[in-house]
Image 1: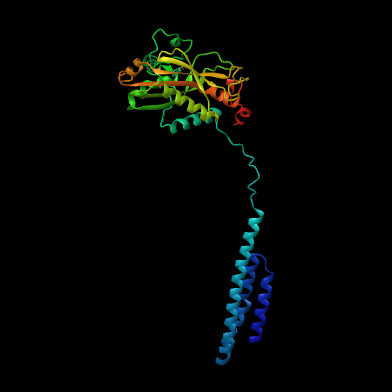
Image 2: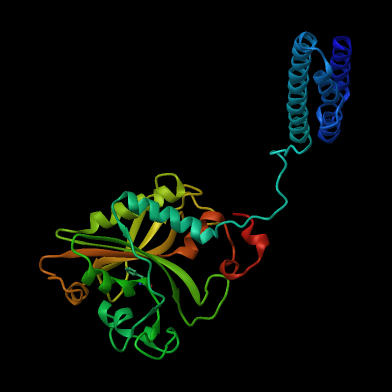
Length: 339
Ligand code: PHE
């Protein structure tokens, strides 16, 4: 009987090697160790033996049962591991294959706006997004635009009904709110979307973006104005940019200036972008008019400040060489995909 048990053990261990899947393994386990399995049947005969025989045969039978049980367990682990290894190699993803799904990207206006904001945040400015609907008071009266100024005409302004009766025509409509709501010193950058009832062409749109910044404190002068403009432009173009100022008129600044910067593409020599002049015109600035400071709730004999604004669309066009402003509002992905 011992012989029979040992033969069974050898057979089982050999057969296990040939099994490659879990269901075959379970079936074979039942055939050997199940209720009426081959080993179980042999063990049942033990009760018919004499006590001495039972002791020796029983010992060997138990040992065999343990060996076989362990062998089944080990085989099961091996089959599972093989299965995992097989799946890992067959289901492997190649991370270097480009995804077919299309991804969106940031609009070029957003990209440049963020760069501008970064420069000012570094200089300690707070960011205020401009309101798109505002009031005639904030957009015009509070910033010293005379009642008779042509900009208030139906030609330029989109009028609305109600308390917020104007679509902002300029980010300057935030100056008064900021002065009234923030303690001095004020260092604010105001990006915003503004609207003017204008004919649309390659360089004009009825909806466009401006960025304005204001500083209000004691002893603020033109040198502060010059420094912040130069820092912003040098950051945007990645090189030192010079500026020059010419007199300009805006009701809310006195003196008012128009600002040009040296062409970063030809370093002032003259090229297509600066139309041969070496300078690019595009900003407006000035020391804030005392009336505006007073209307903002501050004493103009103590406080002074400067305001500065530019058209973000134009800066983005110069920066990326975009020929037509209408691209910005069009949903053409061939344009948007380039950024
Ligand atoms: N708000 C003016 C405009 O839109 C621009 C400006 C801003 C001028 C700040 C001077 C100072 O025309």
